[in-house]
Length: 317
Image 1 (tube, helix red, strand yellow):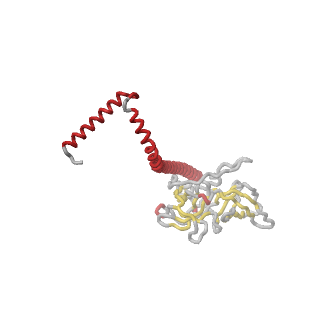
Image 2: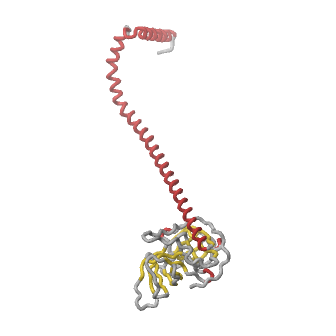
């Protein structure tokens, strides 16, 4: 329709009539004269509206479902991330607490024996330098380490240093079949030589074939000249079997090491040996009958125990 003066007047008239009808309908309420016409329109248009709704509603519901699923999925992912973060915090807290105890045990062992130690962390484990039972630690010549230094932790004897680099060192574990160290039996002081047994107990040959020894007896290192490769008094393990030795000059016993070699974390390298032989002083109090002995836990981060006076040479193996 063209935009003429007559069309504009017609539009104005229709708008005025519409407003008049709306006013009359509102004022009339339920008795509005337009009520019958409204009901008739509802009867005609209602089925059409319901049909359109039946087509549109599934689509709308599907859209809402996708939107809700995306929201729920996002919330689930958020909860999963929060749960992971919480687990990591708990794990870090447990690890820090465990390492603190390891360090306390290491320093207590060093203090009891009069050892000056350089603490280091185990960074690798496995074959090295032709040995099958070795670890690599994160301390080396830059930290004052040299070959044939004794390595301990809060439980006892770990091994000895075999090779040294500026920032790392290789340690031969006491469990290696090629390992050997002089030992002294607690109390009696009977001397023997221990060799590593791999996954099995260590084997100790006591020089006195008539030595009185029984299961549960404990051994410490005998020590070497100038504390190399072993300082004296380091706990080695406890006797778990006394083998028959009829007619032999020596007596063989099997010894379970105090150190758990598969769980090494923090160790201490003895950089200054003790002034005097601590003998059995580093061993924990002997358990009472019926009470099992639990060795101290191993230790962690790099720290140095208080320095001890220069060592006097010790006789040894």
